[in-house]
Length: 351
Image (cartoon, rainbow, N blue to C red; front, side, top):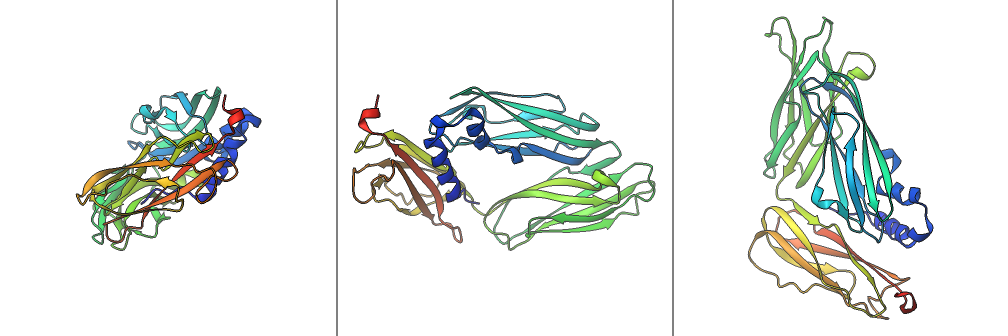
């Protein structure tokens, strides 16, 4: 699935950065990750599973944000993130993956992850994880990974759910999924004596479009309360997928008429592809790229801004926002989009 930053988010980010000198620490930190996204409940976790949840940190500021470190209050939860991306430029994202260790712990577990920011100002963000790890429930495998699937081929996987508790009436009653391209079916396995064993067939529909899909299946038992629902993560890559890095390119702050430096955006594909067309809605954006007919899994796109003082393509209200669309030779894949931003300061404020 192509990476696309909603236009509303980009406008919001520009408003935040122009006001950063007048806002409190709490205000800008709220835009790094909103309060509503700072907690996640795994609910029920089967023994042996190690479910994951991604927290996404974003830099909405003109200045870089430096992540000084991330810690966990409990060894039941481990943290994974790209340490090479500890410096987030404008609009950059950092995915912090929290993993609950159902393979090593049991019972109700809670952990607080503390993200330490030391630039441009010192701040801390707390992320919360919780879930009950059950020793009477085993699910194999503990996640569904379809891998890289050819377009219109489909795939299927099977989950085995085993209950070893004392409730003789226990059963799996339903499976739900928020993704329309995932199909599920439950069957009981009466051949296993002395255990409650259920099979869940999970299929990826042949009509699934190109791109990355991920989410959770929600197994439902006849338990009471929070124990009823058991989330199982799934993921798949259909066809050739292109990723843009960074999804939004900041050319910095320039004086009026000052040409920007040339910066690069990189397109990564799961299979070799060609670029057939590049379009931009701002004529002052230059892309000095000689398009090659050689299919490659990685293409580097150079970008700079001529920054005219007036006329077509000149910055308005001290800022510039442009959209660049890349069309490839991949059948059925929509153009890949990324954004370019820049701000202008007056000469008297240059020092």
